[in-house]
Length: 596
Image (cartoon, rainbow, N blue to C red):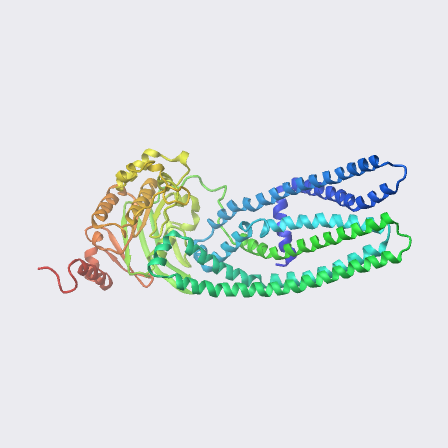
């Protein structure tokens, strides 16, 4: 993609949003600025002519000069008003893309979001809209408007100068074109080397997020991680400073060359005018004012063009993000989806960079059936459930829902039929009711929220809060928000599952932070409330599964190596038996210390 294509792309996006409104505002802005710059250039000459007019007394001179000045600076105020309207328009353009970005991201395949490449694309795309008016896609539009405005002013000044003498206008234009060539060198260097800076700022963003997250503060303190953070940040700082020094050297050389050319141009223009014997005093003042104004406008034009060139890097990031394929909701999709009665995986493989994370998966779950998936860390359990609920797309094999391919069901409809509590699920810094219902306040069923909170054992906890289910979690959005313990968080996430009332429930390590009594109550609640549903439980602790008549799938090295009841697996699966013995020994005083 060339710079010209990127520039055109952003302007098409902007003009497509505002159409005629932008066009007429730009035309009005350019007309006002043309009149304004013509007035500014002629004011000194007009003052000289008024003073030379013998038939006018001082009162009339002051009155006429005051009226003309009022008109000129009235045009300037109108110009500022138009510029303000244009700035508001470009601000809206930037932030109107926030919901567009969210729509795209949540339509991406989850494996893309989880990848390093996907994260980089997202970070750099948001950089193009969040870094303020002077950076990103908004700056491209703003500086393009500046180019149009200054170009109109330059044309007016050159034509006005040309009516009196061609050579001063020619010399000023020629030397400013030479200054533009110097600026082009700077722009080219920036565009070529910006990717290296992007990579460094992406690393910097990670460190900033880690240092600002409250959840990481305790680890940083207790493990004395600040020296490590400081060393890594210092290395990153030196790399960023080295990049900035190189860029500063380039811009210093370019700016010095431009200033030299500007001085030479002014001197050459004055010499030409002095050689012209018939230049009047008023014409001389006009030329001086016009040349200064013209040089200022040429400088503004070059700076605007340089700013566009620098910001076109963000246009590349913006286009790369927008070009990523995402799932769009079809207008023709069915409005309802039948109940999920069967989920089946056949010969499923999932690869990243030609490495199998899971492979040869055979699994079937029916309505009213609860299964468990167990295995050591890294066995592939979390990856498996991510493509079971449609977040990942298998590399090979098929996943079917009700005997139809998972991909044939619209994601938005399928997601309404399932509820998932991941091991790393987030609790939002919203109210307790919003965290449970996951919807806007006016659609929350308060009675239902209170019911599920009571069922998971949070009734008394919520009742003791001053604002009840309206209490905010965390203090990001409310200074008096509360903090949850690990067990309270897991209970709240399960309350979210119960509130959903889904056909398929996937619970990833749902009792990892619960004490044994709470764990028993949890599984009793699962039996009572999720009876008749299709349930998949991922677990490390096997004790609660031993007393249940459910089918257990054992995973190792990315595949299912055995499935059956607890007793059958103890007799026939060495991996399961080893896991059971290891956990049993921890409760019974260690290996070889079984009680009599």
